[in-house]
Image (tube, rainbow, N blue to C red; front, side):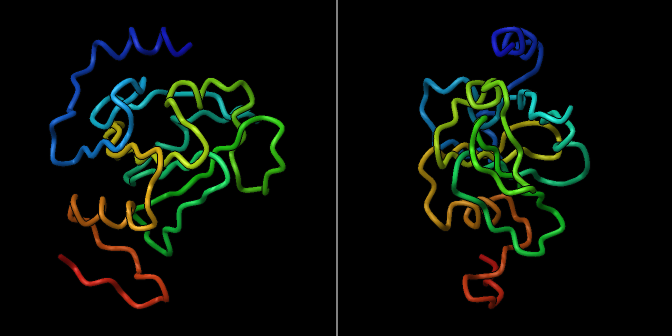
Length: 154
């Protein structure tokens, strides 16, 4: 499925040099910031494209790390776990492993998909402030600072 999607994505332009793209992943990663976001099955007849639908940024975290988005309406956060994981009810389960392979994800990988369906950020070992820094870079309203106080705009 990933190879078929990759061939299909060749029809789409890439925006790897866009100021909305921030790549902290490997150059050998199958998906890089600025590429069209691939689809993937998540069990219960849910697909990644279902999560991406709407005028919001989608934050995907792979593995046991979860993104904190606070009450930000412009962000929808989802944790993607491999099959067989003891998962909370709100987590998405990658039952086939195709989603993890399609994004080159490992435990802790953070991916942000923009509302236009393109990947904005890929980070395999994100720091606690990686999400906040990306949002500041693309000029979105910042997340609350740790401790609940609003973060200052750059």
